[in-house]
Length: 466
Image (cartoon, rainbow, N blue to C red; front, top):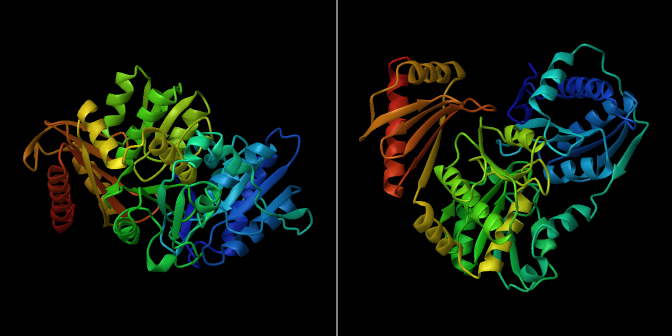
């Protein structure tokens, strides 16, 4: 069954993700776009480096062409944000990217982009789902134009920051593209500057070197080692389609998005004087709200999935918005998360302050409070995860680990808020048979201990058949 999750439809290649199903999804998407009042029916189709992604993209393009669309089919793997940018820049009806983003190599996916230059909204994907299988698939090779990526996207990123300052900064940067679409994009962007950039795992690999291309530990162990060995100022990673990011500080410590987002909020508001509201998903740090409150900025909390933030970006200016799993975006660029854009914003921060990332984090903690984050992904069948969620929501424990439970929130999954301002969140993944357990506490040791208590709780529930 084709079902759109937090960002598109994803399934196992050769299982549900087949050429026939991709054509069915493309036909429903074409039917939806045909229902819009668009003067020029034109679509761009991109793809990532996964097995058969180029052929799946070609199949989707032929369906759009068969439905009377002018189709731009990209001739090589490109970052998903590039496709979003081109949809908006060219004034297209929409776009499609064949990618499963950060999911393992056995998956592929079908992402839909709206004319506004971001992921399809919940209403759009619901409309597309209603159209699945309603009309027979129509195909044609006429009207397909093979397109090469241009320079406009990178030029737009340079305008976001103080480019002359960054160009003269002599920063030492190690990039890890995890064998995905990020490739050498950031290295090429900085090629004519004084920055010294080295890219790891730049070669496209459908198997991603045998790991899931998700920019977090332990997948980023090679980046950690390279930063330490090279004396780099920062390590920057992108996921399979380069819309998510991972960061490693100068001492080799992994810096989660729960630290990156509040750091950039301070930078963009205090130093760049950007205006707008702040948005974050349910699994983001308490720091975001504390900092936004100190600046007098409006704050929105959404369910998990960057498309919820992107929808807010269509209604108002969002200075910065982000989720836990490496997705951050700014309205000044796109209503879309973009790992490469955020990397440049981080380099802008380092060039502006002249301070190492670790020191900037400590200064943020001294001013707004210290919080540490941990996460584990547990393989758990969907029904078991749903029963666990109901138990936590309907009959939560009075104590969790060493702390009293001060509150229970169920915006997306179930979050137990403890009496020392720490929290633990249990949430089934929207794309995999996985239960994600997130924890945040005032010290690193406390966050790890809280996470261990959470994992133990899940195993006990699993053992009793909950």
